[in-house]
Length: 280
Image (cartoon, rainbow, N blue to C red; front, side):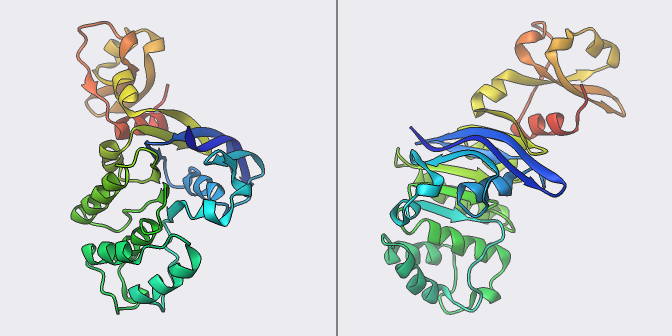
């Protein structure tokens, strides 16, 4: 079962078009959403959450059309957006009172346990919080109303490595329930590499790939050498290449390269960079 299913999603803006975007977020999985600034990540996420009206395509959440989700259905979704939208004149205690009226399954004890763990002062107003503190408060809310699906747009924005690890730990805890799933965008690809089961890569409004993380890492490798050595390879093996001061490197398909040729491991960030900046 898929907790999110997106098919042929299209949205046009002046100077940018989200084109034919399709992917799934299976129940029990963490799906990382990567791409450069302006590639279409936030537009896709807002379309899933009903904050942007698509021009075409279909979005299903928990098997239902996204537009047909009930209030109870929406309570099963926890969301953190990059531009944290918490009311600035409220404090942590005020937020709990507000959320009681929004979410039928609000768990105040869970909320305070998380805000205390994140060292968020209960009486200080949100406008006095740093960006990282606001992100932690938003995540605490998302994890405190029995959500089964988390949709997170840059939840680690503004956080130092220790704070990011705190958030990753909370997401690991959330995923202990097999029906739960997380759809998360982040520029910190190393965090996604630790956490995710699947990676969806969007570039210039189009999905480049949507695959299992481990399959990607087995499928691709990095070749480093001279232009002559690269030219000797089957052209079908070379996905993209980059010229450097000391030679050439290329993202290659591991199974199309002769055995015995030295290759470097390709991480998810490497794969993204070669698709984005390399040339065929």
